[in-house]
Length: 608
Image (cartoon, rainbow, N blue to C red):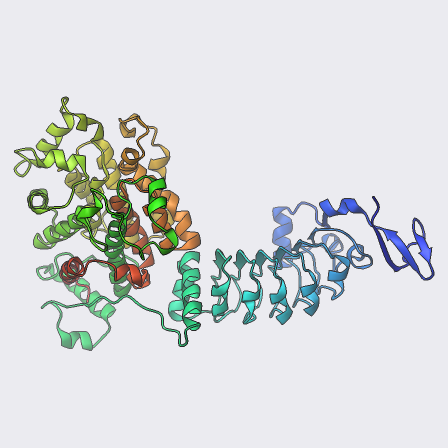
């Protein structure tokens, strides 16, 4: 079958003339071909093009305009690549001669704008106009309803069309390296949008920090702003922590300068005089690149994120992923009630488990001993906690070890004795996630010294969980959290975790129970760390809520898994950016106890 077009007679040959017009056969094969004028771009070509160091011979091959092949007649090309040229404008008639265009790459040129007629590319799905000199987008641009991927990075854009939510199929957009001072909140109304890059612009203040923090947080904020704007005045809820300062802080001194300058003053005094009586846990100068307010916000995010993860985990603890999906609606996860069974009948929505209480007693021990982690004091508090609790204890290791007569007096011997016993079915579960919970508290002391963090993590872990798989996992989590408190990027902080979970074939870390029990497998600490590594992609693309729900909806040992993921992502997200409805869900009595302990912690750390 031939395709024909009636139009001005441009070619006499192979055409059927009717008056002044001719029916020109269209080349159907071009539908599946890419029109490209570029050969392979070598590193030297790329450098020369970007720096304008172009040799005369090379320069003569660069196009200054869209070639006549695309403008003089109608073609069926769906993909056109005109990148790495010197094209200064797109002809207004181009949508008429490329009616089926779905992908256009005209990056690395000299465009200063786009034509108003761009709306004519009704099938356009991908547009790359990066590395040009475009200073604005035409209003008609927002009518490209099929556009899915847009790259306008490295241009001169100072604003975006307010109706940009007309791009209702958009999934990915790169706005980085422009001159944008703000983003229209209508971006938050594009439901399909899942990747938004906007770094290296001219945003100011907190919004700039939000942009640099990552795609997920930025998208979440824009969606929240848009949602609130539809109600009237924009009111974004912010989590509040009531800081109640101890005697170490003189209000007159605080009022005379910023919190940061006061924190620096205390640090200097501690170094110069050696007087650390009132602030025994104050970090030395240079231990973190975070300022004092950011440090406090990150630590609050870590502790609150861990509590939230533990609390949400109660919903699906010991369920399979299919059961979790059956009983709960992910889209409205916290709106419903707990599914009542023999485990959940002990809890109400907002409660926390032993996992969060472990963090609390670690903090209590650290503060009491001036930053020194004493395992005997910790085990004594743990023993009292287990005996006084009326909630189910899901850790087979803690169940077995705490039942030993010598547990309080010699915990490591008791733990080793239980682990090595041969006459119990519990031997197959010598590894479980509860070795990870105390690490969330341990890292606040001497987080600047990774060797000390490893020693403390191993020592406290062995007081209950002596298997080397437990110890290795505990050290990995503690080291990761310590690096994040130092201000390291999450990718760098996760390097050792990433390396360890990729080598999980070591027989030492293999699960001894090979019966494909999903719940047992998920309770192994290295599997929890592997999930943490995997869920980072979800966090980067879709934010902390989606990442946490991915963790909780897996079921299994979801309380400690949620606690671990919540501690890491909460630290990175920071307390003020945690979902307010999750913070408010927490049991007010436990939250009050934790806030009191955190205020004591900030006092001994010298944080105003």
